[in-house]
Every structure is written in structure tokens, then in C-alpha cells.
Image 1 (cartoon, rainbow, N blue to C red):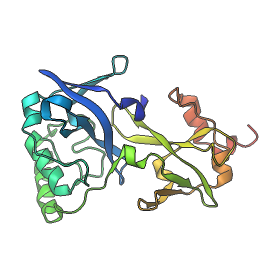
Image 2 (image 1 turned 135 degrees about the vertical axis):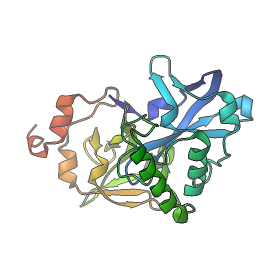
Image 3 (image 1 turned 90 degrees about the horizontal axis):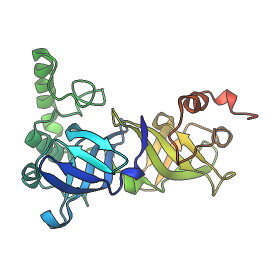
Image 4 (image 1 turned 60 degrees about the horizontal axis):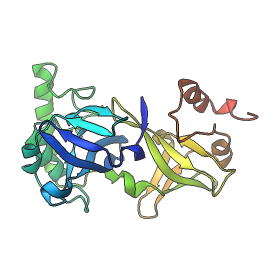
Amino acid sequence: MLRNVKKLDGFRILATDGALGSVRELYFDDEQWVVRYLVVDTAGWLSGRRVLVSPYAVKWIEWDTRSVAVNLTRDQVQQSPGIDTDRPVSRQQEAEYHQYYGYPQYWPYSEYWAWGAMPLVTPPNPLARTHAETNRRAQTQHAGADAHLRSSQAVLGHHIKATDSVVGHVADFLFDEESWAIRYLVVDTRNWLPGKHVLVTPQAICAVSWAERTLSVQLTREEIEGSPKYDPGHPPSHDFERELGNPSSHHGS
């Protein structure tokens, strides 16, 4: 099921032995557009330190009570490697984080997550483990390189530039609750086009300028203007997604 990233803001994170804190933002990677970490404000019990929680740790999300249960203890989180969430997270820091929790590294793989679907952590066979170790060693020389991680909060407000003009800005993201893949960017076009929100897939993005806060898409202003209107209060239905994927049906609607 598709969910709004912004709605996760403030959700309580529940460890196996008590509350950890609340969600403040998400980190996603800008290569595969998958949520990699929840940034959790630990409030009083860790002097307000912010920590990362991987979707690998998530057991369930309860939207009615605004809660996320994780299979971690408070002590595990307290002893986890310190990461300054006010600065870009390096690949070396990610490697240390994954090693501490025993999670497979995702970056050597073409799939969203190592060894297949979330939240599979144990390799399905010994060959998979061997393959993973080989990839890990191959990645060592790149361990200090910047990870392609972006803050969901920071990207909100980035301009969406069509092939012929700016058409809106990023207002939210929709992610798949099972895979944590970002399926759509919610674009607010009300300052540029007849007022509405539309959805744009990450696959439509052809260029990104993080410094200029601009995402360029391979769509014309007319194509975006002709997209079906999206209601931010409701997840898109299968019929809506089918219409979204068939631009020729938008004109004249």
C-alpha cells in the first residue's frame, strides 16, 4: 500500500523494551529512490540525540496510533555508532552502522535491498552469503565516498522543471509500505498551473541539481497539466495509477 512520507512525521518509535523517540524525517537514496533510514529524535533519554533506524528493523507500522514497532532494544540504539544527522552520511558511516546491527549492505546490489525483498536479512543460501562478502570487499575502497542519501525534509520545496518550464514543487512523497520504495513525488502545481496536485514518478527525473533545488523531468508542461488530479488526503487507487500511466487518456478529460 502507498503511504505519504510526511504523515510519518512525529510517529512514535517503539523498541522491544520501551519508546525510542519520534520520527523527524527520512533518508532516501537518490539512485534507487528507496527509503534507507528513519531519523529518530530520542528526546530526553539520549539528550535529544538523533539516531538512524533502518527499515530492516521495522516490524509493523500502525497508522491509527501513529506508531512504528522495531525489533531493537533501547540499549542497542544507545550503543549504536554515532552519526551526525546534520551532516551528509558517508558510506563509511553506513558500513559501520550495518556492521553493528548485522544488516547486509544494500549498495552492492541492483535490487532495492540486499538478498531480495524486505525485510529479509538472512541470505537464502550459502552462495548468496559468499556473493555478498565478495561485493563487500569490492566496496571497501569506496567506503569513504558519499552515500547518495537525501533528507525527505530537505527535498520538500524543490522545484519540478518540465522540459519547457517550471511547473511546481515537491510537496510530499508516496512510498510502498512493503518495499519502502518511493513510487511517486507529489507535486504542488498551484503557483504555476490551474491549482492541483499531481504525481510524478522518480523514473521521469532526468537531471537533479541539489544546489539549485531543482529536479528536471522528461515531461512537458502540457503533459503534467493534463495529469489526473491527486487528492493528498487519499492514496491513489489502482484505477488512478493506470490512468496516470496512460498519458494519452488525460487529454480532454
